[in-house]
Length: 70
Image (cartoon, rainbow, N blue to C red; front, top):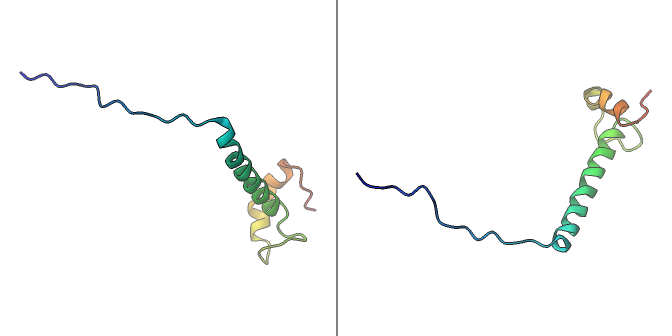
């Protein structure tokens, strides 16, 4: 009976310093904030879509985030 090794090759995972990660984290946080703003402001001054469909889909989330919509 042959013996099969269950251990695979060792992987060398590079270490990423926080200073290299911080600008990307800030960039994606900014994009996420802009997305939340435009969805929250939908049907308002910065309306991206006509009609009320988007407003109705995100209605409760708007109230949860503190956006007035009435």
